[in-house]
Image (cartoon, rainbow, N blue to C red; front, side, top):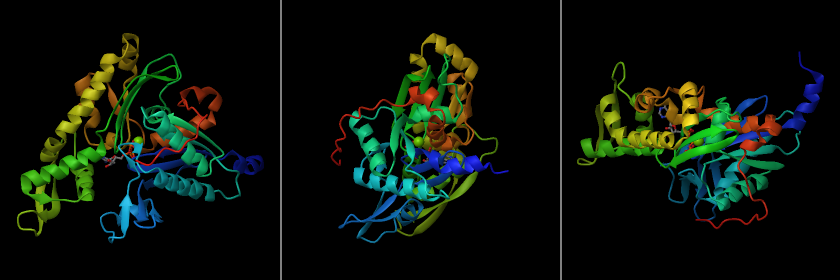
Length: 357
Ligand SMILES: Nc1ncnc2c1ncn2[C@@H]1O[C@H](COP(=O)(O)OP(=O)(O)OP(=O)(O)O)[C@@H](O)[C@H]1O
Ligand SMILES: [Mg+2]
């Protein structure tokens, strides 16, 4: 039965966790779960800079826009490359989440996941964008930490745990203990780079020009990091660069694995380097705890087997790996007293807006 007191108080406890990802933006609201999960795309009119569409609608427009409209991803390689557009996108998602509340709620408290290793200026940019997008209070959390909290790792305890978040723009590897990140690596090789690998492979081997969405579909359908129990094939459709005509080629999962191999080797190397730098006490904890994989890249077939084989650690995909960061960010607000230590430090003295790059 609905508790009348909860019902009355619900509007006053609107806490939001946001994963501001290169590929997807997710919004998590306490007691409601993930309420928004849309591509981080914005369509803009070139001259006036007017925002025409945000999220799925804007991604649909990509590659199909007339000359006066551009569809862009305001975050590149996990960092904000278009500040104003990012702010518009954040405002849209926060207001959309807020408007889903049944009753008028006060402005929300928001925790935003940011890539580890961003500069102080970039942190302030995200903070500022969140406040001007309508947050009552804003906090930042490094993405691998949020992923670890969302995956239920014991980050605040005196025991080592490890997460590898393979997103669209970046792969983040981190070892945690006592609420902090002990060792970490961030590399700009992740899902997008894998899509490019497939595009390059199709061009070089078959003279076939394929679009980014086709490349992503191939990766998700037959892409793999480890031999599959049953190898598969799929039709690659694009334009033949020699004849200039539409063309289709049958490719196998073995070929796609070959196309992904150098990016995957770099991800494996980053995990091994991080383990190399991890203090021995924590390594022994990790041998018990295993290594948790998050982000969309954790869904690549065979990635856990490949990493387990190459690191001699038990690597496993988190439950719902693509929502870990947003859920983790939101969970921090549910238990702020205990989890405040996991938030990223932020120098709030200056709120200078960074110049657009
Ligand atoms: N089944 C799948 N197999 C392989 N890759 C997948 C699968 N599902 C999603 N991906 C990839 O995961 C990536 C998106 O993951 P995610 O949403 O975690 O990224 P992000 O958080 O937006 O990016 P970042 O963390 O780098 O800012 C995309 O490159 C997408 O193609
Ligand atoms: Mg991410």
